[in-house]
Length: 333
Image 1: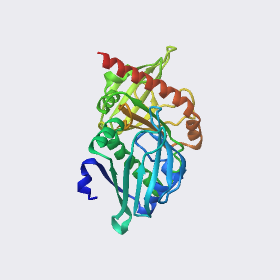
Image 2 (image 1 turned 180 degrees about the vertical axis):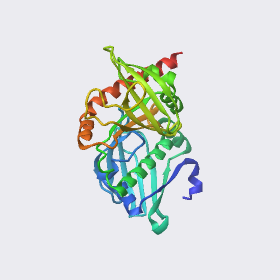
Image 3 (image 1 turned 90 degrees about the vertical axis):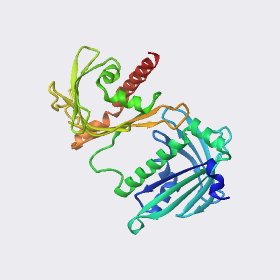
Image 4 (image 1 turned 45 degrees about the horizontal axis):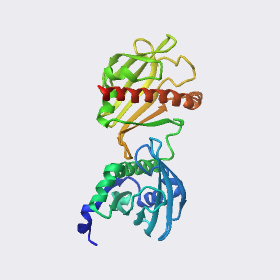
């Protein structure tokens, strides 16, 4: 059947991946690799079984950032390494009622064929089914995010498993039931930040806010016991409404970096990346992902940072609860 005859019931996405197609094909067909990138932002994937051959199948569960699990089955129809994969998606008893066929092609591109143009063509039984899947599951946005994560995984493979000496980053993801533009606004405007930012029982007061690369935010964090500490963000990259990158440190009242009040071996500064993506899952909303990475840290400081991951999870969990509560109050106004 010609593509023109199926265009109204297809989703077609393309992405240039900066890696050779053999590597990209490996990432798509290895159970050890695919879990690191498969799915939209905030999703993780657990593989039960994978047999990449014509007639073989891949059984897996996608875990959404909102805690929802999605059981999936892919049945491979064509496997031509490293050029092409065709598979049927659907058919798991008790799984999500989604049934469509996908063809993924991998074309060499760039100088000496060191890049790969990936084209993903998903064909549904009708235009109405396609639109329903887009509306309920965010399939269009989800496909874009998935290919973006593939590109990131390929980049990591090309440069190794991370930058030596940075240590293991802290990552936390939550879904906020509000549009991306609003959530970004709540993160970047003083009058909003002061209403929700910080663990439960704390109160933020912002004394300086200059949202530009090189600008900074200086704040006072009042604690439940009456004590307080100061901190600062120095903005490096600002991409509304998708991403913020800034350097974080504890500070004195003037906004100059100081050592952490609770541990002298805590890194003096750490890099914070916050991303805001549409939630490509049931219910919609915004997936917020916070990644903290120590910078210019000694081995002892990196150990202290990694030992503090559990404490950071607790603090950020309370912070996200306060953000969700504030969004709810805004909605009732």
